Length: 55
Image (cartoon, rainbow, N blue to C red; front, side, top):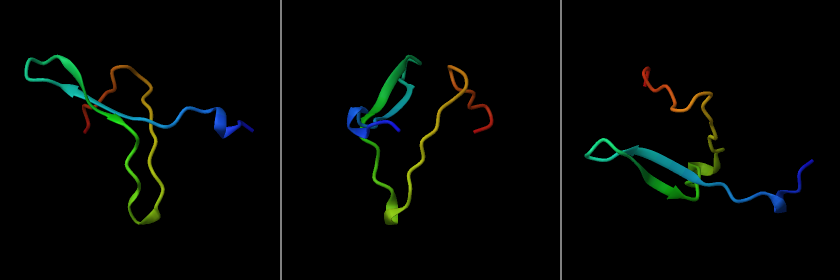
């Protein structure tokens, strides 16, 4: 088991495109607290960049 004190805090990083079409960071900070005490969602992508064609 991993000692949680050794892990860095979670970060929420949201990226997008600016008006010139250049990539930029929109949000970089702690994750939002889940509503009503529910769990949060952590995900990753298998490819970089992520395939958002079906979104």
